[in-house]
Amino acid sequence: MPATVTIMYAAGPSLNLDYYLTSHMPMVMAQWGSFGLKGYTVTKPADGPYQLICTLNFNTVEDFQKAGASPAAKTVMADVTNYTTAEVVMAAGEVVASG
Image (cartoon, rainbow, N blue to C red; front, side):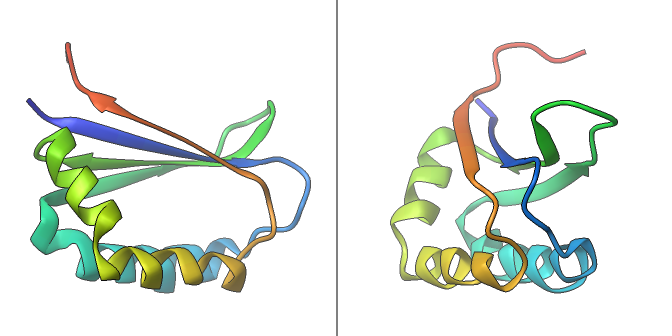
């Protein structure tokens, strides 16, 4: 079953959206594409506790777990400080319905 990983950046601290979109996310695709990352969406909420939400789409939960345990994950995570100091909340799971 497909899986999603939702990454939410807390409102408040600055976030360099240009860097995120032009450097970080292409790097994430390059690092994790071979682990089953199919694509992503980035949402900028109008209001609320989060300033940015990213949803990663993986083939399976197991693919995400492999990506997260890979050396590539260290590269992805080390890049976060290049665009924000915001608290990050992450949730991952299997897609059970879609419309």
